[in-house]
Length: 262
Image (cartoon, rainbow, N blue to C red; front, side):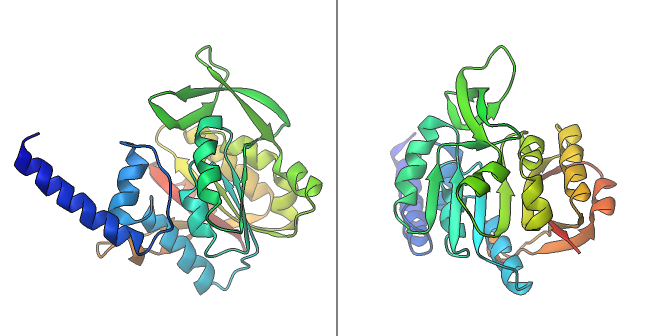
């Protein structure tokens, strides 16, 4: 990289970092990580989705008591959610990533970091973590597993910790969403939280449809898809459709789909 290019990039990064510091809480990240790059540029990773969630809860006057962030990673989403909800419980089973989550959660009083994953069982499960991309950890039975993740049913966790009503359940756990929902059925039925899932329907359609079926069995009927925005990430909104119509759409990757009951 020549000196002129280095100078231009350095100035651009400094401007972006200064701008993001005005809208974001301090956050510890991994150097050269994609999430880090987005935080420097935008202030938040997945800024578009986060601001849309904030507007969604406000515009629909939804309950904002307890948020469950399953797949919290380093805490980017949890820190943003701390501005919306009274309490945030951040679940991250990857021990190395959890170290940063703990540091970042210490900057706010209403985020509780937990070195746990969510599933349909209470035990230790095999997992694979790409050492070159620590945020990509996933539970697997494959022979290439190289880590152990401690997991728990969300239903059990709520009972053991005497939690109140859960308002929002965000799940982004690399294909293990179906199992996490199975372990939260009592909550889905009794608390009727807003649920958001990452839906990788091009590569993992079977798991996505199984997750949707669990939600339907628990009384969910509406899906909200993030609309396109050409005027900035903070101007996006979720568009309502039925779950039945959503399932019939051409499969694609959705970073976040919201599900509600009638």
